Length: 489
Image (cartoon, rainbow, N blue to C red):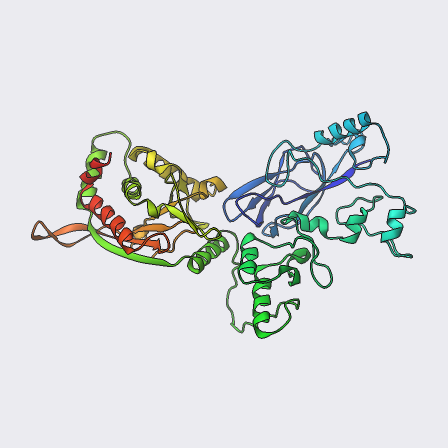
């Protein structure tokens, strides 16, 4: 007899809490093998094909293309262990999750071996080699455990995903939503009058906000799926506490929007992730910006000479990156992050250089690992590879995380200057405007030179203006006289 298993959207790592279904790779009725990709999703980081850890026949799909699902929401169900001749791979009869209450150790071991064979060896956060969820015990209607937890005259309560003919364990009966809540941070769904045990919260940021403001999350009623507490719930509870209202009340309805004929664009995916990150940067980081004009004529001439000498072409961005890493070696305060919980500045040993790239999907910041150890040629190749991947939408989460400093060449948009927002949790960002001919005093004479405006936005917690000004002045000196770099090579 086939067992229907539910496959939920796994945690894709890097703190992602939701993903959008881009394309289903299987239909209802299709036979899937273990680790076969079944759906393509788009997270705030990248496009990902999600493999299914079960083999069998797809019996249901949850969500249309374009639907955004939270981590832990059902993706599809798979019937495994079907009748002979169905062609569907599945587990042996001993691994259906129904076991006798007594048996020898040998039979228990064989059941465990059989069960391990039906689950994927492919590791994604949240499923894979860790094995299946806890087995449910088949309970008779006259079972005393059921009698003590099920009122007379009512049917036993069965948790979501339980199979016909099986009942939930007494613990599950006491908290029907505990299974769903455990997917999101081991939290339980809210019970009447508050939460029991860990509280399901959509992200650590929301939990941190509540902790910093002294809000007891057990008294907050979540408006998300299965009682999940959203940021809006916390903000509403804080506002209610300020005005004297009870925090357990449902969030107040937003005032109606009277705009006529306006287009509504969901703030999700890459756009939503950018909005969240930049808002957090502005909220948490006391930033300041300084800028300077520099004569880039000699830098442009040096690049032309390098490319004329033969070999792979060197990009201007690669030369600016080389200048950045040398400047950070002199001013390591700017290659750091702030641990707000410990109230410590953490100076980072390596420079992982992010660079802003505009793509059809929006702004992304790929990261060049160990930029301080790369040559100009290696940097050029890596910038080209990551830029192409960004345009194709094939960047992995690893390509988009772990940066320690960001280089933003907004001159490609034809602008001279900007006050960039720091890429949280980094401590600084260097902005580079367009390089254009301008009147400039050179060697005491007025001349037309290639001039660029450089701006540095920095976290005032990690350093003061003297350090930031010293960094920016060193960068400008290297732009004006590239031979300065020879002293540090």
